Image 1: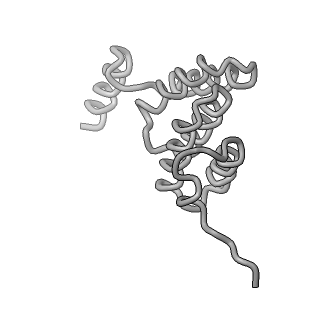
Image 2: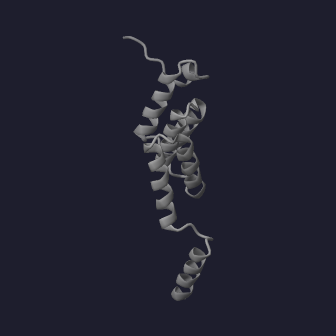
Length: 121
């Protein structure tokens, strides 16, 4: 029975029915290279392609958010931050990126209602 499942998995990988680990690594490497080279549009496209296969990766959502921020898509960047935080409420980089979004555009809709108010003692 074990041999059957191994053969089935190998067959599915060969025919592209299952994403191969090499393909996911290739996508991340490609997206990260685009990001480092300031090719935001390509990075966004590639991060989104990766997230179609692995939607629960909060860290990759933060990378996508950073690429969106670099391209000027402030609202979309903030949405990716919120998605990452909803997946992992302790993801410090998601909060940091959200702060960059808010500080970069004080007129962003909802910024005053989404950010906790701090009062003096």
